[in-house]
Amino acid sequence: MGKYQLDTKGKVAVSKYHEKNKPAKFDKKQQLEKIRAEYLKKKQNQTDK
Image (cartoon, rainbow, N blue to C red; front, side, top):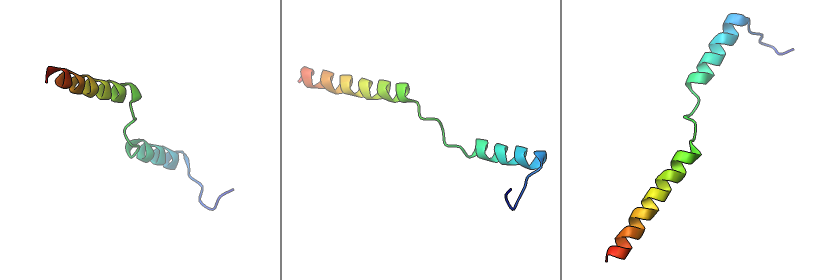
């Protein structure tokens, strides 16, 4: 076993800490929609000229 062993209270504290400091989940669908909207806007501007 490891040098430091956590009791249940310690494990809960550690899991809460990691949950809070986890980076925001990367949303691929939202990112694709954003890129698509920008592309369509650019395309529209080119056809207007």
